[in-house]
Structures are given as structure tokens and as C-alpha cells.
Amino acid sequence: MAFSHSFVVPSYNHGRFIGETIESLLDQDLPGSEIVVCDDHSTDNSREVIERYRDRIRIVHPPRRLGMMPNYNFATTQATGQWVSLLGSDDRALRGFARLVREGASRTPNAVVVTGDYDQIDGEGRRIRAEKVLSMRPVIRPPETFHTQLAAPKVPPVANAFHRPSWEKVGGFPEQATLIGDWGLWLRLAPLGDFVHVAQPLAEYRVSYRPNIAYERRIEALRDDVYIVLTLIPEVARQMSGVDMKHVETARRARLRSLIASYSKMLAPDDRAFAVEILRDWASQTGLVHMLERFARGETVSAGWRDSALRRVLRDIYKALRR
Image (spheres, rainbow, N blue to C red):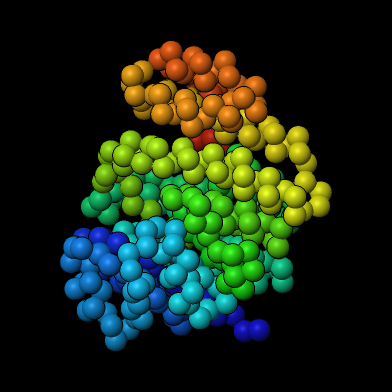
């Protein structure tokens, strides 16, 4: 089947940025991608901005306000391309995005996901830093597609494309996850085919303009992690052959250590009870109750090697060598 590609923009209350997002999609150096903007009943001026482009894009609205992951799924159902790239309504595509996705998908007939690198930008659109996905080879196949996603998503939130028939086969983004259902999708797709990584930036991811967002979403984010690690990952593992369960258990411990360390820096000692309760079963299953107890007592907890200065230095060197 001939290659076809859709850019899908799930939108909600980003009237300040949505025009830039659409302009970046219209400015691709390989024209021809369908552009679908799905506004989830914004209450700001988003609809007014989006309507300016009606003659060049397709505009859709869900029947009611859905929220993030349900809107991702609804928006994807509106696409007609065999390949779909979701782009946040506050982010921007670089000019080569569609071309590089097409080139990546052509590397293997079994591709189900294409990823790339990306740049972080601030609220004013200024480049903060380049983000490179260091651990993804040009083509990885099952079960490594699964193993590489266990401790954290390796598919960037803005620089990706997925095979729409495969998305349909696995049931789309898991709506049990409020915020990080995209990680759930990559795990669900892992048994179905190859993941391709293009070592070039595809998009610009807007950060740093909502400084309290991590704190505001702290409860939802932790619950998402618990669902993905304790429920979704075991479900996918049972569907695959060749899965290394020791790898699964190691990743489960590493993820929890990283979360506890991160939240010990974010939360004051008297603001940790909810996290302790959410993480209790996970800690019990992984033998990390002692770490959770230190967190509950108000200590700042280290994630060990993943939190070390040496690891950060080595990562920066590796990123510099890949430029």
C-alpha cells in the first residue's frame, strides 16, 4: 500500500500557540500530509484561531469534552493516513518531519513506529536544548521493542509516527492512563513490529511556560505510572514470546526508584502521604519498602546511578558526539 501520512493535533485551550503549530505543519518540505485539528471544546480563543485555516486543514470536534487520552483516540479515528503523527497544540513541527517519517518507515516492511529527536523550546519559542534519544538503534525488533520501553518511554512525545492499522489492532491509547497513555501505546505496539529511529530532530516541544504543571498533576501522574507498570506491562508481556522477565523486574525497580527520588525533591515532607499510599503495593512487590519508608519520613532519596553526576556528564558527552 502506498505511503500516506496524517498530522493530528489534539487541541485544548492553546489559542496562544495553535496558530504556530498549524503553520509549522503547512510548511513541510514534503507536502501532502493530511492535517487534522481536533479541538476538545476549548474555552479560550482556540476555535477562532483554528477557523482561520479551514480551507487548508480539516477541523473536527468530539461530541463532548473528552480529556487528553480519549481526545487522542477520537482525533486519531478522524485520520485517513496509514501513518499518524500526533503533535501537541502548543508544539511545532520542523520542516523535515513528514519527509523523515516517510524515509524511516521505508527502512523495514514491518515498521509500526517511527521516532526522531526533538528540541525543547520555551513559551516564547526560544530553543532551550536538543533532546536526543540515545538508546534507540536505527531499527529494533520485538522483543527489544518492548524491553527498551520498560523503565521509561523511549518514543518522544512530539517526534513520532505510528502505523494506524496497528493502533486500531491494539485498541488505541489506553484511556486508563490520564496523562501518559502515549507510553502505554508504545508498549502495546511493541509486539506487532519494528520501531525505527531517525537520528534527526523532527519537532519542537514546548516546556517551561507552566512551571507548576508537574506539581498540579502529581496524583494523576503517579496513578498512571502504577497502572502502566503493574497492569499494562504484564499484560503485554504475556502476549509476546522471548520476553526477559528479569529485565521486566529490573526495570520495575528502576522506575520506582526514579519516581521516589524525583518526588522526594518535589514534595515537602508533609505533602507525601498520597504518594506513599499510591506506591505502597509497587514498593512491596519490588522489595523497595525501605526506600518508600525513607521517603515517607521526609528524607531526600537518591535514585543511585541514574541520579549521579557522573551519569549526567557521560550522557552530555555522548549527546555532543552525536551532533
